[in-house]
Image (cartoon, rainbow, N blue to C red; front, side, top):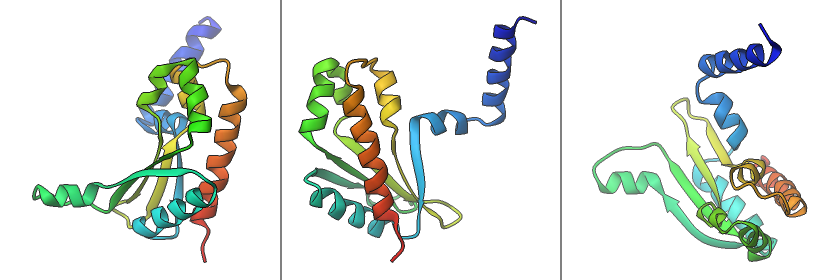
Length: 155
């Protein structure tokens, strides 16, 4: 079997063994939080604002579910950004605006663990084929890593 076919078959098998995990691992950065969902996003909001980022909205999905008679474990979305970083990306490919401003999702799973996730900047770079803004993507990647890590520190 030629190497390319072997590699393709191996990758396909791996994706079938770990459905969703392989894809999610490439698209999302997912971190466990020692805090509740609300506290996780409160802390992240405070840190983002202290660094000059704008909080555009906070969506409580569980509250929305409750309004229509459904029950969902705590799940909240924070929408935030910085036009100094986002605008150059949109100038390279305006359709990235569908994923900007950035979003962070916090949720409690069935086991009681709280998670914080955001779309990997590398995934956005690839999805929108932006090849002329490596420095911007590098800054966003570093900042998101540090800011989310700071929000997740235990007291």
